[in-house]
Image 1 (cartoon, rainbow, N blue to C red):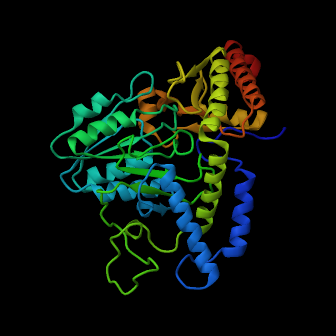
Image 2 (image 1 turned 180 degrees about the vertical axis):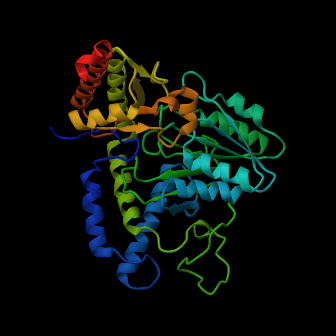
Image 3 (image 1 turned 30 degrees about the vertical axis):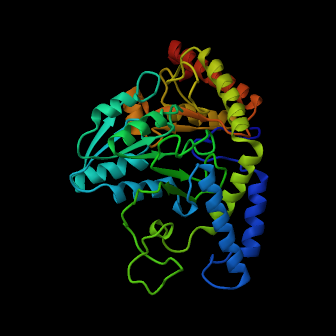
Length: 396
């Protein structure tokens, strides 16, 4: 086997920029202490990094108040805070079939245990949710609309600005899951009418695992569902209600924040538009190549406008897991197979009955050679399957 071709960037980006590895190592060796909880120099320097990264992230999303950028563990952590902190018994929520389990499972829990009604709007044949369908679902008790900005299965960028405008007109809080979009496409909270945004650092923001968070627009308050140390006003019996302390608990992941800091600087240096153009050029190449392979079905990839560089496909007559195992074992190509923690997407596509799909996630360090090799590998696997089907005795 040759050098690994990594095409699982939809799960986590790999490799990270060299600058991220270097900065995390040097920062942790020099300043890896508890931030801002004492007066000595190392502690203060660590606090400065946290504050600087908070400001950088708020600016990156178009937020006006950096204190409303709250760090957490990942987007799943942030989405739980949103869903359990905004919905009450008797409320109505609207989501979609594009969602990841980080939204689906908390909503299901709320519906089963806290009398929250939930409607799920399906996507169309091209993979997009129609804002008019969201509007039709809004009722007097609708409290929250929560949408996956970009599908982690089919890569479609949802029309969040239009959905947000509808929510704003009806006085409904609008939250987005930016797990796949943050770092791949520009996000502006004001222009997109977003009230709450959840993000993770280990995907296209080029940071490590274990860091993420949320931005909460001014005028929106998320109910406290946890409590603990904040490092300030320790005599207060109740958890602090002002941001960012309201949604931050205990010692933060300083190493993760350092990596996020370096990853964001790398993105700003390269230019998010340049990164997107590079990745989409490769995605177009992959799409065009896979479309020529007999027996391959691509999902919601008729054209790649309003997409990121995530593609899903199946080979006729093969389980997704088997395709992924062959790509790994025979060709040293790493991709993701299965339901991708997004079961409703696969139910709507019909791929839930065949073990999901094979997902290719293209990142900034992938090359044309990677894509050419992958297309050839998929072609060989599809051809082998056809020959085996025609002559089953030969392959016993």
